[in-house]
Structures are given as C-alpha cells and as structure tokens.
Length: 430
Image 1 (cartoon, rainbow, N blue to C red):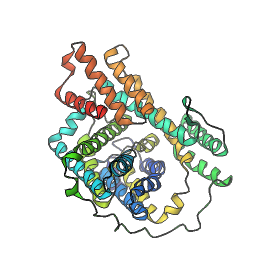
Image 2: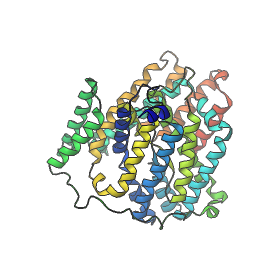
Image 3: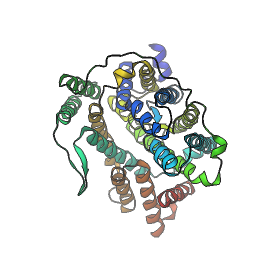
Image 4: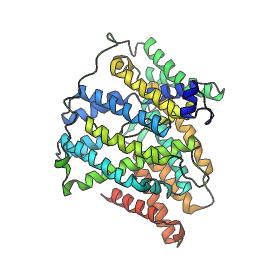
C-alpha cells in the first residue's frame, strides 16, 4: 500500500486507495458500453464483429494503462464515439473507402499528432486557449453529457416537430429515475460511492422487474483479433484526395481530447492560475500512442473518454483509478456476457450527475465582458445542440477570434490561437 501511495501520489493529491478503486470501477461501468457499441458500428463496414470486441477491449486497456502509469491521471481512453461513426458512415459507406485504408488514415492522423506533440506544439495550442473558454469547455461538456444521460434514460426523446421532447414514463425510465435519485441523495448527504451505488441499484431493479436477466454463460474466451489486426493499408491512405478526411480525424481527436482533458483537469484542480493544465503533455502523448496502437490492432481513433468524469466525480485523482478501470476491461475479455447486462439506462444517471458537477465550472466566467461571455455561451449551448464537442469548440473559438479582431483587441489573438481559428474555419466549412 505504501508503494501504491508513493508511486501514484495518492496522499499528495488528497485521495485514498479505496476512493481510487471506487473511481476506477465507476469509470469502467460508465463507459463499458463501448465494448458493445464500437464493434456494432465498425462491423457495418464488413469488419469481423467478434474480432472487434477483443480489439476494442485491448485498445482501451492499453490506452488507459498508459494514462494511469505514465501520466498518472484517472483518464480512461477508448475508441471514440463520433470518430467511429465518421469512420464507418462517412469514409467507408459514403466515400467507398475500404476499411483497411480507413485504418491507415487513422494511423497517419496519429503520426501527424505525434509530430505536433514533439516540441510541445499540441501543448502550446492547448495553453493558448483563453481561460474563460476553458471554463466554457468544462461547462459545455457537462451540459452535453447530461443531455446524453437524459437521452439514455429515455427522459428526452426525438420529436419531429420540436426536435426533442419528454419521453414516456415507461418501466425502464422509472427504474432509471430511481437510480438518479439514489445518486443525488447520496451526494447531497456526502456519502461515498453514490454514483456507483446508483448504477448497481438501477441494474438490480432492472433484473427484479424482468428487464434484464443473468446470462446462461458468464465466462467465455475472447474472439481472435486476426481478421482485423495488422490489416491497415497505410500506402493506400497516402493520397492527396484523402488529406481532407485525415485532417478531419485529426481535428475531431484534437478537440475532443483537449476538451475532455481540460474539463477533467479543472475538476481535479490540475489547472494553475494562468489556466494551464498540469502534465497536459503526458496526457496528449498518451492519446497519440493509443491512436497509433489502436489503428494497428484494428479500430478507429482511440481518445480520452469524457465518461472518465464519472470516476473523477467519485473522487478519483490519480492514475491508480485508470489502472483499476483497465483491469475491469481486461476482465471483460472473459466476462463480456455478464458485463453486457448492465443497461445504458443504468449508467445514464451517473452521466447526468457528473454533468451537473462539470456545469458548475461556469461560475468562474467573467460575466461582465461580452467579448468572452458570448463565445463561451456559444460553446456551452452548441455542444449539446449539435451533439458534438468539436463543433461547439470550433464555433466558440471562431466567435472569440472574430469579436476580438473586429473590436481591435489584437493582444488576445496570439499565433497558436489564430492557428486554432484556421483549423476551426476549415472544419466548419468543409
């Protein structure tokens, strides 16, 4: 225990081993859906679904372990949602690119990011983001994941007339609401493990009311990765016509990961008075390495997962939490039938509560300066309304740059920020 405390700096960060373990388990449960969802999306391209299950788990284990042991942060990494959809529906189905070439594109985008990381270029880009916009990123992601949580609970549903509306109070919705209030009440009373308890209670209730059942087979051997591993076509991806999609991979990964890391770092008090994130460089290198390894194994871009905020919300502050999360995924290689019974509406309440905690970061905004308040407002509201972290960031940054340029406040427009603006403009137009 003394070694763990010293290696992960647990006491130094005002945490405990039990809290870190609780946080790791909570993060695992909050993002375990990726084991099922990612293979389901990528298999549409013709990739072997069984192999994708194993690859999804192992790429998650790799990235999360590196995050815990190297960067010493409770950030989990996995194949990114949105990025896997872009891989499948845009590149393969719409543009007719083979999944092998698409994997090569993911690999190349990771190499480009590695180049940007050398010399701390990515870190400088992150540090160039104004402090108020960093606060807006945290609040916006909080609102976004809370929206995802309500949607997964079934409280918010699609409506052709009004875009969204309240859903019917079905049995599963009511079960999910019970789980939500279990979390909220435990958090109000400052009881440890409220989020994890809510997930467990919801799952048990779902089982009691016959919505889910224990699987007949609990333990099984993982499927082989051979059908997709090392199948990436790097040479086929080296075409001028594919630079645009490669750039899109880079853009979405850059701002999804930056948005997640900045907001989570803020929640962990890892942002200094100047708004710079401590050890951001290590976190970004972890993201790069995970993307490259993931593409080699046979999956779309691996990136920092916003669901890591669930574990942070429990109190996780060190890499031990990430190690526990990775162990959970490693066990899932053999316990996939059991893990799969945890329904989305059981983990959804956790996202709602974590979203509330992240949303409170907006209290630090300068509400007296419209030049920063308006771009922050754009970020916060367009993230959930466009269902995209990267789009919200792009629109907010563009608004910030345009307003400061037109008002003659050029001192706030440094070169890294202008570079970000160019990327944002291309992303918005293309």
